[in-house]
Image 1 (cartoon, one colour):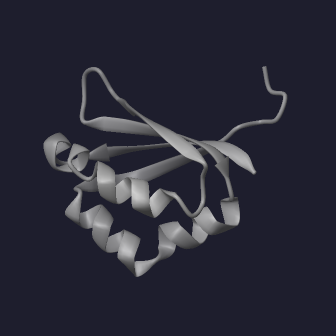
Image 2 (cartoon, one colour):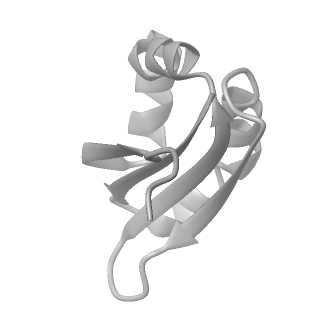
Length: 89
């Protein structure tokens, strides 16, 4: 299990933010919890997830259901994934 930070742009912040209930349902199988951060000056977000099963997350990201949801929620490429370095300081 790892802690992961994912960042990406969004085409319409209001649309993206309204997808919170759907994200909660979709993220549950691969992480124990997550927090959302919004960039102060642009339409970018960061999602900090805890106790992530990286294998399940990879399958999640490539699933047709998620690809369709990303389009509907105006997620923009590139999507950047950062994995916490254990003991990193």
